[in-house]
Image (tube, rainbow, N blue to C red; front, side):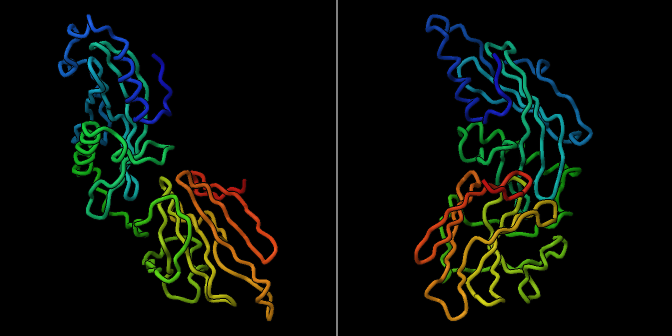
Length: 294
């Protein structure tokens, strides 16, 4: 049974359950209990970073079906721990498929798990998996952060976590509350400070390891202008004017107004309107933080 490595866990989960529907009712009583899978059958390959971590767990995916997740590589980075799993699927205690998946475990300042994402996907599996599967991943995340070799307290979290959820439609300028950036290690950020000692910003939901923020640029001729910045590895990667207004001196009647929206897949639509025209331009933010024109 070949399963595409980039399938989300939820699809895999549904697929595994679907497999069991093909088992006849006459045979259903003869299925072996997957909880009895011999632990010696589960690969427990030890990485030097996993000596003190329970690096394997089992998820039941229906009658006669189980999947084992074994950590083969663990890489701490800032507030995230990246884990490469070897996944074995068992049907009736027999190995039916083996493949690999990489997950990013994201923690807050108190080392509490906030997100677990399959690499290349935006979904938080703590929100869309069945409860038992969520608990298995949560327990693994707790063991992971408890390992003294994996403590991620040395890297400072520069940007506050966003309270917004995508899709994002528009800015309510009257209700805006800015965060102030305390980090001085972000290359290229200083030119957006707009004559302030600290950068003012609004966090948008991250895309994996890419921070996405809105920054006001109200220090020029117009006090209603916002740029969207993308930051990865302590460096500003992309910038785009996405919100505000512009007009020629003494010609406010022909004002140009710009606004934007961003969906769950980080597709941007920038809309520029004048008194007699409306132009839409599409962009997408990739996993490297580049803002690509479509």
